[in-house]
Amino acid sequence: MEETKISMYQLYKDMLTSYLKSKSEHALYHAQQFSKEMMEKDMSPEETVSLHLSVFQELAEDLPEEVVDSFDLLLEVMIGYGLAYREHQSLRDRQQQLESELNVAARMQQSLLPRGEISLDSVDLGVISVPAGKMSGDYYDYALDEQENIGVAVADVIGKGIPAAMSMSMIKYAMDTLPEQRTRPAELLENLNRVVERNIESDMFITMMYGFYDPRSHQFYYASAGHEPGFVYDAHNDSFRSLEAKGLVLGVSPKVRYNEDHLKLEVGDFIVLLSDGVTECRVDGEFIEREQLVEMIRKYKHLSAQEIVDKIFLDLEKAQEFQLRDDFTLLILRRKV
Image (cartoon, rainbow, N blue to C red):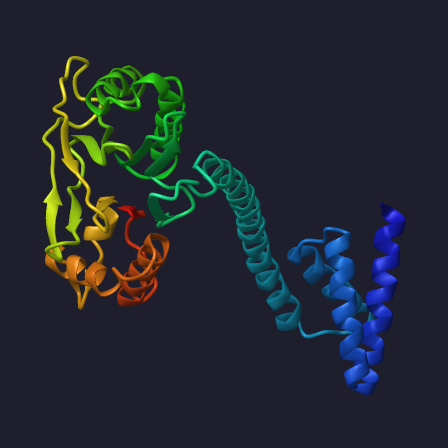
């Protein structure tokens, strides 16, 4: 350690001597290289000031007392600066570590969502889900069973961040344990409600709409746990109506019964499920009206289901200057034949 100090002292002395004689750019370049060595040897700012004063006193004898005293003040300033800088570095390192962990968690969360297309000629399905931050409080699901029934779901945690994301993971695994109930929306929600009520904090709740489509009867069965109403598009009349069902949000009480409704889809009809992050988007500074959203969907109804949801998202993202205020999930299921 002592050899290192001697070496740094001599290096700095040579560098300062050269600069005082030449005032050249080359000498300043050496100073920049010296700063890198300081960092490698973990020299603090106050050590650098002390080094400069020691070398300067050797090179310039009989320094005015005011000059020497001014270095005492500078030294104290640098001590404070060094402590603050090291604390800042420590906080930044912890922030980078947290950021890295959040990135891993976000990738894991994305891996829980369904992938791939529904391979059924009679149905066109499209979905988009974009988190407002690293982690999403929205969840969506779609699945094709052995009888070619298609189950679809959109859920939203009343809460944000990591706790909300963890709740979504719980919903995913709970649904995976209830495959036989996917054709019975009300019963599925009742079982999910019991799981949620037992496993999440009392100040957190989950809204959800679940439905399944039977391609043989063309009936869509659905139930809601306090979720944002969706839409039904009637191709024959070129009209939209709300897809609503009453039901308490998941997690409030363990003993809740849900109502199940159904409707028939004709060729070209489609179901729209969404999270409140869609209806809480702002257009011209105001929350978008459901009628405005309907007109946006109508504009793109000639496109495929996936193209529709992608176009709607891009339009609303642009209207908000590409700053989502809430997680955004939009799903469309259309009867093709």
